Length: 564
Image (tube, helix red, strand yellow):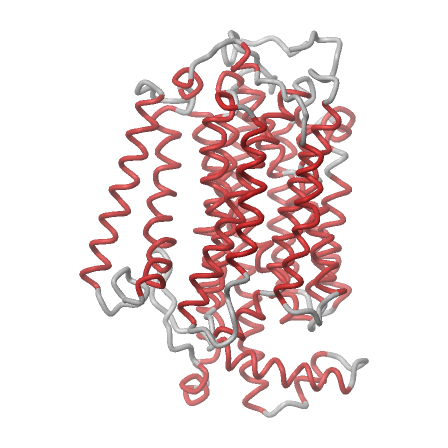
């Protein structure tokens, strides 16, 4: 490590920061383009909103495996080998995803798309297992600022992907999605031949067991729970697609087998918990780190889960193409603000936890404002409020974990990233899909005959919530096509005017779908409200112990000197 007079630990620090920036940008581009083609997949393959949410959710759950496994082994095998593995997985993910073809059954298409999206996420997680600890090590005296700069690449990728969705909207969905391979090739070249430093924990010779002590049995339980949920709700539908059977509970035709799979998932969770707890030498773990893990699970669900659906929702509410425009607007705001974390912390005087509390409040307000907006002007302002709210969540959470738990090396922040992504894939994305099915279906039930005609054949069941039938994806897609033709004939007309030109039944279906979207956003806002309570408690905790300060290995938490 360098001495305290330098802000970085390596002469190629800026080159490595730029390479990490490009790697996360590639992930953002792929994520944004995929978000713009969810409705295409829904209409083409007949998916329900929950099934689309499960496919989109694989773009998060796979991340967990890449970042946690990568975070555990990166200090042992080196960052370079992980970059090579991530590059290969990115290419493989494209090959598998493009295997989905017209004429396939819903289940077969689901399997191809889920698997390809999962591999894409594993590649992204592996890259963050490199980038996060690398930047935290290179710029150890100003982690909040530089981790926010690193993660400014995410909204930059979202912006480029959102613009691509607008510019090449007429392209085949495979050609659109393939655009993420361009930044993939660039980051591969930027990392090529670069020397990478080791973390503070690795330099001081801490063993893997010592790095796991702060995680302990408590932190391991969070990871184990989410992995068990992944096996139950992620692998079950996927494996039923591979086998062509109902065994894994993809439907309710085999309740006994579904119960067996539940016990399998619980067993996986127990094994993972025992393995990680044993690595920590059965340490209890830090209560503060446990709280950060839980908070970051909520971060993943509300930020990334919402991002995965927001284009689809705002397209429904304000017209085709508006979703991509609003998504780009929010992403540009995020990109710009992530360069301001240092100013907010040093000049305004907000601690990292104060920043997080402010973000949670703004995100809650923003989601409710989007739901209530009735015009493009109003929703533009509401989206900006929400964008400011979600801007600093992810990188600032990583900075807090790095500041307070340096002896965990890459382990804690990698596990935190994995928890956030797994939560986004298992709670955020499918949860919002389930909410859309539930609320839209409930609205259409006011017209029983129409509901019987348009309801989805496959029921949506998520976590412990009741089974519901949403609106059939293909039938809804046909109605949206009719609306699109009306709007093309009168491009200057309003959305309400276009709805009035449809057949009454068609208008009723679309209005039900739109009402479901609004109610989904309100339900989503309860997550940042819960986060605000957690961050307020953390703010009070740090005030009691003398204020928020970074610590270094060997210092005692709660009795530390400011970093020099």
